Image (tube, rainbow, N blue to C red; front, side, top):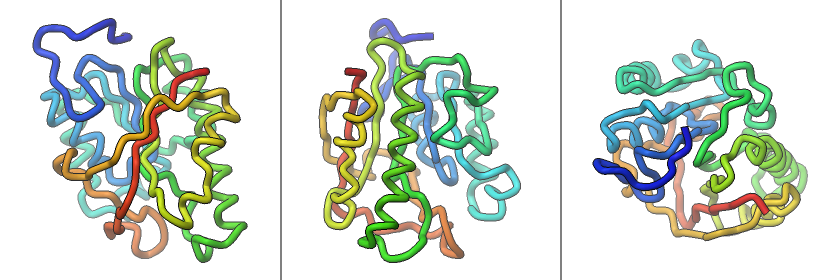
Length: 211
């Protein structure tokens, strides 16, 4: 259900409220989704997804199983094996619409140095596909949020240009502070170090609207 305004008892965590229908994408160990649900005291309006199957999730992340259990206890929907580039046709997501679609630190995997042209292109294809899918899953006033590092070589991804290709308009670029989301543990999500945190450094949450 689309949030039509702020109701009595609405709870907020940074850009997000308990009234909004929220889809989280590629959430690693689901700790970001759980941070939101915990702050709201409910996950009923949250659909949390990751690319991993349930078996992969538990193999890759030490806290994933407990995070999923807590999300489900709070009423969230948790989906596994969801490809960000094809999520708009996923059987459990189509034809749902959302107020907020969130993809933190999109990454196509560690396939070489991050400044290599072909590696950057693989990341760009992921983000391009995500934008194309996500724009079809928004309510009329809905927003797409991508949190991304802003220094070289990540600045070469051209997040704003990729969004423009899907007719998305930048509403705001807000500085990202992980301490705003208690319990969120950003994970590498690929290779044998997938359960390790990575240095965030300078990064922003890019907020887009349909153009």
